[in-house]
Length: 562
Image: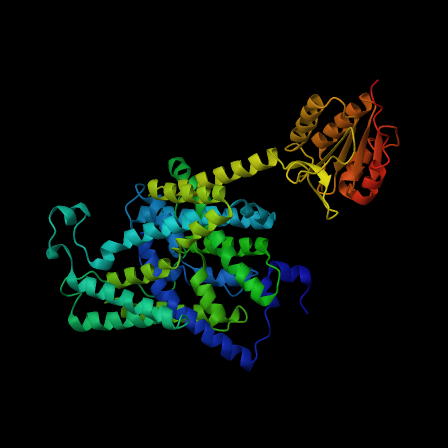
């Protein structure tokens, strides 16, 4: 029996013991995912500007490391469209795509991003990723998907011209390789049809194999057609990218942060689905460790940063995978291809690889998301729209879109914390305490102000509460009693304690009482430690609102002026 501390650091020790039934199911699930890994890996390597074989490298050792050290064992880890686009866009202008310098910079991105994720996981900082909300991620993802589609149109259609302007200035069929366009558009149609009819079917490898065979039969490569070409066979050799200059490091800082963020959010979206199906709690910190180690291993193989693919993870679950054994079988298939079958990919047209990428990213484009956001929150819909627009506008430095979106979202969150909901309450006919002005309710008692603040009493909200009380007292000098319905207050910090002390002193100076109802234990403990809840004539405490209402009803009526 494996000890719990050891299994925590080595999650693969908790895998179920293999038996005949388990291995049979895991084998077929692994074959399904493995048959998708190879064509997608090659296609995403092209998207990242990397040598095509590095896409297969990224599907081998990094996938193995991830499944061994992640808590989510059924995720399809390897190259993904979004991460590959970020890498390709971030390195544009720093080196020539596919060159040794480009590969070195991409490897450094994988190493730095992996190291950052590893450290975050080890110090249990996975909660930081909650700062990126769904609207920001949705806006960025959809803009990135459009950029990916735009980047693949030239290869998909076999366009020979270097710029799109040539198509509009001198339109001519000669601008296109019609054979490449036929391969690309035909493959796209078949892949889309297969995805609709049977999502779990590994259509990508079938279409890629058929296209490669047809290309070979037609002599497309010999005629000068754009094909995958020769890929080296064998295991990846250990790779070190060399020293990273300070100039390159500063240029990679922002891209590394965004790749770290986006790639783990991709992992989170898949891991949450897996945890819901398995009824196990998601351990985001362990997944950070696993994904970080996977990226580091990818960089040391001369490849690029990996992530968890939502589509491959979904198909893995759909195919019946129960544990990490399925991923091991998928990796085994990739190993077979890398050792003996890479020559088969020689004749595959590059337009077919573009079709594989386009098919994968079309599922990310969901215009209806903006409509649903607008119905729920116009502010968050605007944040999503700004993120979307900036991602498109700042391409290829598209990481500015998600960073600005994150900054705006945090500013909105801070604004809400600084402006908490504070209402004056009244007794509704149904017996509940509600907004007195909204429901046109009478005051709870003469010369009494009864407030409820739906927030913690801390540095962000304390000044708002104090300002609300002081403004009301200026307009109503006859008020001598203040009642705080404190049940929504879960925590009080030092600023909150000081504000409470000021309110208590204010009511005592007016010869009145501060009534405190429903104070929770953490808040009560903080106030008691500050010595503010000692019995005195200016403070009254009640456990429930009903008890408070009964006491308030006994307050003496104001003496009429003669």
